[in-house]
Structure formats: structure tokens, C-alpha cells
Image 1 (cartoon, rainbow, N blue to C red):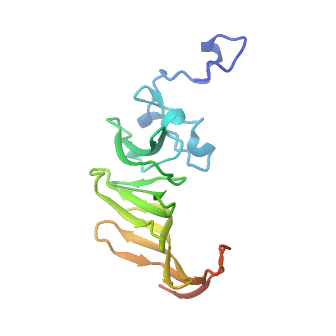
Image 2 (cartoon, rainbow, N blue to C red; image 1 turned 180 degrees about the vertical axis):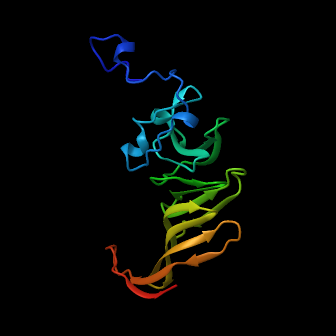
Image 3 (cartoon, one colour; image 1 turned 180 degrees about the horizontal axis):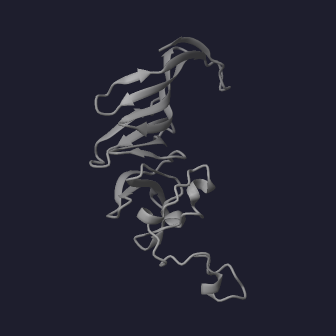
Length: 207
């Protein structure tokens, strides 16, 4: 990798990294988060299926110590891909021709990431690692939108916005239990959206 960046050196002398050097996702992943070098694309480039994760597949991903999940951008859209850190086949969890958000979270069997539907409305998708066809979707509607998901112990926390009546919206961080479907508001606030400007919020209740 980087073998064409020099004018006077040989490709091997110029290269930043030999992708055949034996490093693997299981043994060499350094755990850089998205805030560090866009997920460590230059720090932790690792080979998968003969390609570099950082260059071709892994700009935005998450890991729970057992699996790595990342976003793959191609001509037909975006794939959410996963594989065990111990090795094994790459699994396609989700495909969309629309955009997905900047981070992907994984814990055990549950993956969570933000996306936009065909109307550009933000929601959260939570596919199962074991059965990718089993997807829990949150938000993504005209009057119900969801952002910023993270998953732990089968629970997905996210920021939720719903319209409660004309021009009045409720904003709340919520926790969804993927197994039971229980949806709990951590705190609620309402705001009047009279224009496209960012609304101010007034807490009404918490619990």
C-alpha cells in the first residue's frame, strides 16, 4: 500500500505497508474509534479477502471484541458487512442505495446504525448478526425520526423525535429492548417547530 507515492524509490521501498505481512483483524486490530483517523483507516489497515479493510471496506465500523462490523461503499450503494475477529466469511447484514450514518455499533447478536430512507428521513436499523433478514427499524417516518444509536446487552439507545400534535414535537433519548420490543423514554422534552430553525426545548417530564 502506498507503493506509487514515491518518484525515486522502488515500489517496495516506497510502500507504507505490505498487505502480506501477516497482520490480521483478530490479532492486530488496534481499536481506533471513528473519531480517530475516521476509525483508524490509516492506522489499522488489515487484509480481508485480499483487500485492505481501511482502504476498500472499513471507513466506519464498530467492534465488540468478538466481531467487526463496517460499511462498504460501492457503485450500487452501501453494504453493512460483518465477520468474526477470529476469522471466517464476511456476511452482508444490510444493503441500501441511500446514505447511512457515520457510525456502526455492535454487541453480541445486535448491530445498530443510522440510515436515511428513500424520502431522506433518518432512522435506526438493527439487524441480527445471526439472521440479517430479522431487522428492527426505528424512526424513518415523516413524523418519527431517530438518530445516534448505540447498542449494549441487546438494548439500543438512540435519540428520538416524534410529532405529538401539529407543529409540536417530542424529543427524547430512548432505550429499545430488541428481544421484547420494550421502548422506554429516558427523558422527554417538547418543542414547537414554527420554522426550519433549530428549536429550543423545554423539559416537561423525566423518568
